[in-house]
Amino acid sequence: MTHPQGPPSGIHPLLAERFSPYRFDPSAVVDDQALGLLLEAARWAPSAGNSQPWGFFPGRPGEPGYDRILPHLAPSSARWATDAGLLVVTLTRRHIDDTQLLHSEFADYDLGQAVAHMTVQAQAMGLAAHQFRAFDLEKLTTELDPNPGWAIVSMVAVGKAAGGPPEGRDRHSVAHMLSAPWSPSE
Image (cartoon, rainbow, N blue to C red; front, side, top):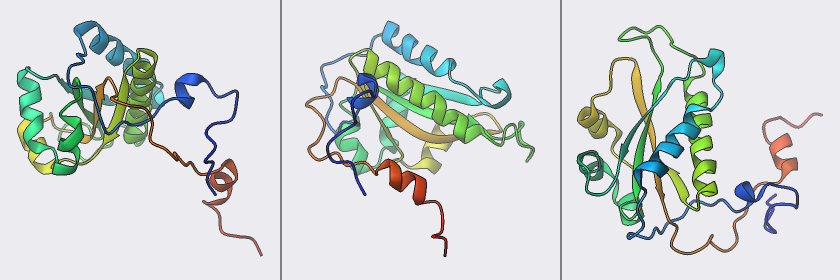
C-alpha cells in the first residue's frame, strides 16, 4: 500500500525532497525578503472564482506577533515549532462578515492551495515548512480576534531544517489513492 522507495524519477526535486521537519535550526532567520516571497507565493495560488479567501498572521522570534502565538501551541508542537524562524497562522474567509452566507464554499480548499504554494516556495529557498494543527484554537482565536467571517485553520512553521528527512518516509501508492475512496464492486 505504501511507496517506501521514495518518489519515482520525474517528480520535480522540490516536491520529491520536501518533508515536514520536527527539528529546526534555531539560529536561522527568516528575513523580510524571505517572508515577502513566501507570502507572494501564497498570493498567486489559484482559488474558486478568484476569491482568494486566505489570510495569514506571521510571527518571528523577537516580534510581538510571535509572542502572541507561542502561548497557544500545544506541548507536542512547542517542542519543535519554537525553533523555526517563522510561525504563520493561516486563516480562511468562510462567511460574509458576521452572517452565515458563504463567502466561498471552497475557502478551506483554496487556503490549502495557498499554503501548498508557500510550502513549495520555502523549499525552493532552502527552507522547510511544517504544517500543523497542534494548538489551542479557541484561545488563539480569542487572542488574534479575526474579523467576522474569518476562521483560523492551521499553522505553518518555516525555517532551516536541522537534519534531513526521517527514515522510511512511506506514502500511499497511486493505486491506493485511486481505489481507497470507492467501495469494491461486486
